[in-house]
Amino acid sequence: MPDVGGHAPAAGGLAKAALRYVAATTASAVQVYVSNPRGWALTEGDPKQDDGFLKGCAEHGVTAYVHAALLVNLGSPTEATVERSVATLSHALRRAHAIGARGVVFHAGSAVDAEHAERAFATVRRVLLPLLDRAAAQGWPPLLVEPSAGGGRSLASRVEHLAEYLAAVDHHPLLGVCFDTCHAWAAGHDLATPGGMTATLDALVAAAGADRLKLIHANDSKDACGSLRDRHESLGKGLIGAAPFAELLAHPAARGVPLIVETPSGDDHADHAADIALLRAAAPTS
Image 1 (cartoon, rainbow, N blue to C red):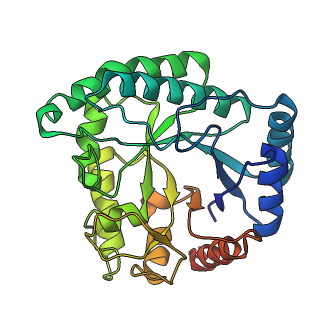
Image 2 (image 1 turned 90 degrees about the vertical axis):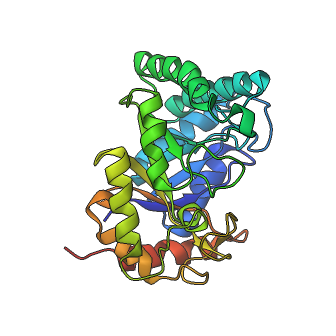
Image 3 (image 1 turned 90 degrees about the horizontal axis):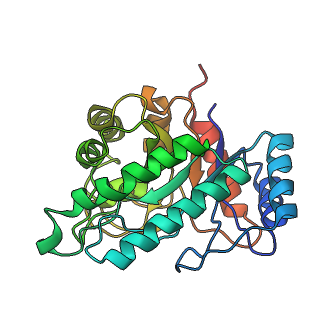
């Protein structure tokens, strides 16, 4: 059974909030933000909270991940955005190392406009390769690129696009993949049809390699397949449905890969607890 959990709150103190979430949901994996998810402000962590989080995760056998700020776009035509994106990822990697996280998720980004589309991957190569080399030298965790829901000249939305993204950085060993089921569905992968999840994961492996998938965001969707809309729903309550998640867990590429739910949930986290229980029940028994 892979580690299963969700995106945990950090407001009020990383250790205090996230470990309370772990207790409420029985999560064995958590994902957290270490900076404002919708802004560029970067703050240093509280050493006591960092230490408490690190020790608490170790004590409870919890695997941790960091999600970088949502503004990150390494393919932007605006140099200031690229520079801020690199600074944000550097900060997230350093903070992830401090709290024992196993990876930093970031969105694949967008070329934004047609004029920049042909140069976007050159920008990604120019800034991402040195950052990956620095992470390797510092002993930081890997970066995990997450394909988007599509639209807006995305650099990677369908899983096939990962081939070009990885090629841009010479298949650097410290760049892994985070697969989001809602994003894949929105980008046009029909996960709800029997065999659809299997075919999508087969395509991911063909594009990225058998060992690149490091994290799965397990989310249902409020919108139709191919909608390009990223609106998450509780598992089994959206248009993907519950059955494809059993198919996901049965796929060889997903074996042992931690799963994080990013579905709607109230302050008591009961909805996340239900989604986590659904995934555990869907896992193969042998």
